[in-house]
Image (cartoon, one colour):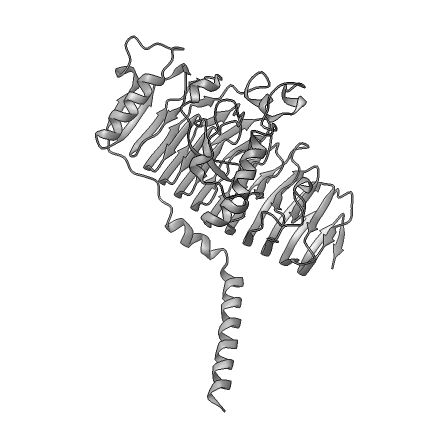
Length: 465
């Protein structure tokens, strides 16, 4: 046999073996991911904020004392900054530093200022997938390592329709005709235009007068992060937002906020992330995995990858676990298991969204052993035509491929499967295995899908082939 034929046979059997191995051991990759996710370690030293304020009392502004304690802790090699039990007011942002574990004793409540001026000067941030300079997030870290927020306390952003939320520009959240909002041409539309026109980031100056709400907790370009036990409520916008960061654990955390765009947890361009035993009740997606928007996402070109989500509860929200819509940098290796999703105000269980302007390659998405009570739209929703106002005439059609859903049961929904691919980029290689969907109102909607496998799928008591 000619040598070139032998090489072809070897390559053929190699790829068959690799494909078979991946199919058999996809969940074994979780073990490898978890080996690379470890909590940060801190010296056994304590820094009580009561030692940094003169006559610091409950309900007084703790910002100055807290920042002094954080600075002292970091400069002295690290440790635990303790906020004792009580209710406090924080008149501005908390900026975390390396080797600091910010610890809230059980019964601690920190209420943040709702005066936008308190979140100046502006800082480098990523806002809806686009880099710029804007108000500081309520809690912020940039270029730090070994940081933690732990304890049993509550962070209350105090956002409402009387302050931050009306900047969304929606009457439902307090906005009225004549009020400024992020929809003004000088605000959000200007930022998106700067992105698409490749305006240098240092010239994207926002903040006062531009009405872009800050995130609650944003961690940018950091390593070794632990967020455990605490509750975040009443956020101006996205709640937990790690960006370009690695080795992240988010455990036993609650996010409760019914305002506009109040996603629970948005890992963006992050690697090696564990989200477990968390509770989400939000005005937008419970978890939304992202990687930058349009030109910025492609310029920075860092995907979100190796993310494990398990043992979580999702109540209200647009999606239990969403991927997108800012996914221009791509998303891969996402594992979702043993979660409960149930609410008449939860739209979808698994949601993947993009369009031909945002693009992005989304691949290797695995979901198993999830109990879905009620969702208002679809149990599994894959949409390449997201945000019709942006159109679908872009030059970057997204790619959705290698998606497997196993042992997912639901009790009530509009659709079981709602897949909307593009003619030039069909949704490819989706497997739905051992799933039972009851109380489904409409037949599956499947547009531009290829290599769809349904195995032991039962909808309204009928097996679907």
